[in-house]
Amino acid sequence: VQLQASGGGLVQAGESLRLSCKASGRTFTNFIMGWFRQAPGKEREFVADITWNLGSTNYADSVKGRFTISRDKAKNTVDLQIDTLKPEDTAVYYCGARRPMSRDYNFWGRGTLVTVSS
Image (cartoon, rainbow, N blue to C red; front, side, top):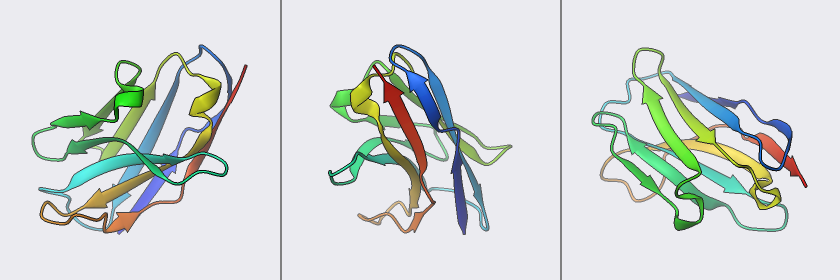
């Protein structure tokens, strides 16, 4: 299984960015696909997740209203649209996948760095 995150970069506060996670190596039927982030000196934190089948979404309170997670079954991608970026959004963003009955994420991709300048 491979999860390849991309789309990070250096942006200014207030701008938008779209991250993408390309999934391959197996079918992800019934999986939950998630985005996490890890800011410098902090632990990795949950950002959002989406069920592969139905597209049901869940967000951390801190990102509701600015982040939108979506998936494209045909392309096997999970995207994270980030609007109105803030300096505190600076982090390495990771995508992951977990089986429906698993509490922990089973697969992780390498992160993509998002840096927001003020």
